[in-house]
Length: 257
Image 1 (cartoon, rainbow, N blue to C red):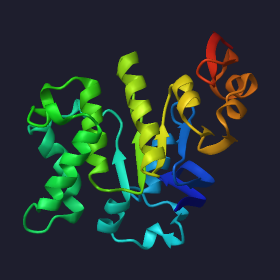
Image 2: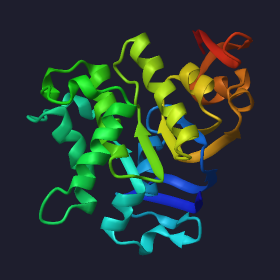
Image 3: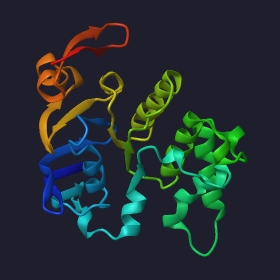
């Protein structure tokens, strides 16, 4: 299984937002999309699962995603938008996760649907929250529930837009550890957008650095997050070092240029 983008471009009302994006992501891989505000990160995610209709091509192995029906796309791509947990869901955690089964539902919920939701709640250690009201949960708990809802779709590809935004340090690490584990154990392709360069460097296998809708750099985190790249794209001086304990590079902003 692979996800491949070939010359993907997109414009809002004739204003170019993405230009000539070509990428390949393999199963089990966690790809991070980084870049300054307005660089096209969220737009790229929405082009991958055809929420937006881009120019160019997106392939799932040899299947052209543009030719897939919406219901088929929903079975392949699990998508968690940015900061959705601020929205209200007047429902229990179980029911919110069950919404992920919508592409498979007939006239009623089957025993298979119930079993899948129960297994996902158990896997993510959300069993005790199953009958809790979603609106009563903490930000970190809500984010886990929404990832669980995406997993209930039984996707091959998980798309996450700022999955750790507005979470405290503990919950940031918990969410990223979870996402990394899911990629490895479930052989998922995971593509996530992040503003946190240190989290992206620590957990992602590769990074794509976007600038003004174009790919400025792509590669392993230490290849992309160089002092020169950060200076040119973010307009800041930064110190980049390798942390032996976490086996990842760390970025410390120093000053604005």
